[in-house]
Length: 170
Image (cartoon, rainbow, N blue to C red; front, side):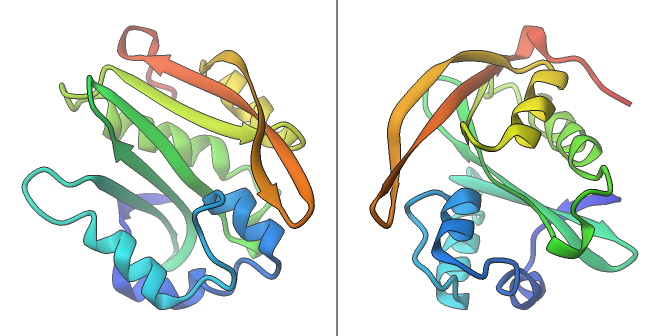
């Protein structure tokens, strides 16, 4: 899978990935509105513009098809947030997540402005938790009742990786 910037032509296939509000929240957090639409994605793409973009969005391209997506929101004080990590439904279970996220990390940590990368993963997402543990992220705790989905509240494990902890994974 090749890592490249997410582009406007990736929006139509991405819009088919999330069939329920819960699936959308699991991918994009509570800030996304179901159903995901082009306007929401265009607003996120607008954040990637300029000399110092607020957000970077990567696509995992497999044989010309969007297979993965991830975003990094640049924060202050050298801290960035890894968000919107997703694998295309047709490609799930094929082992693409680890090499894709490894490529994203390889793209993030050369930036001298980023010393710390954080992420949140909902506690029921056992596969993602195994992935972040295997990649060397450090579990910092549980953010209780972080998101509301319908009448449910979801907890999330909070992870981070410091530049000094990053190791290039082939």
